[in-house]
Image (tube, rainbow, N blue to C red; front, side, top):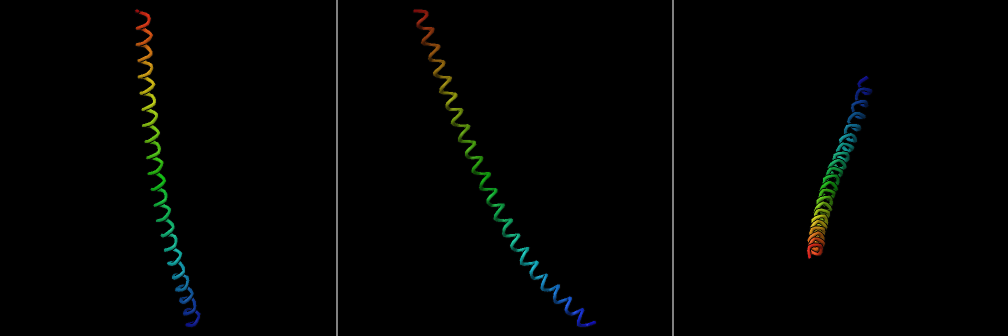
Length: 79
């Protein structure tokens, strides 16, 4: 009975060391995935901000062109 108990303890110890090894690997993978997710989110935010700035600049240029077109057309009408 003592030997059976000892062998079960040793097998639990072996599985415990395997479990801690697996846990450390899972932890490393989780940290790497978290870093990748943060980097991807930052890149997406930067790209969206650049796109918004470009779209706003294009809209502003288009508004100015439309304003100048209205000025020219109204100047031609009054002349």
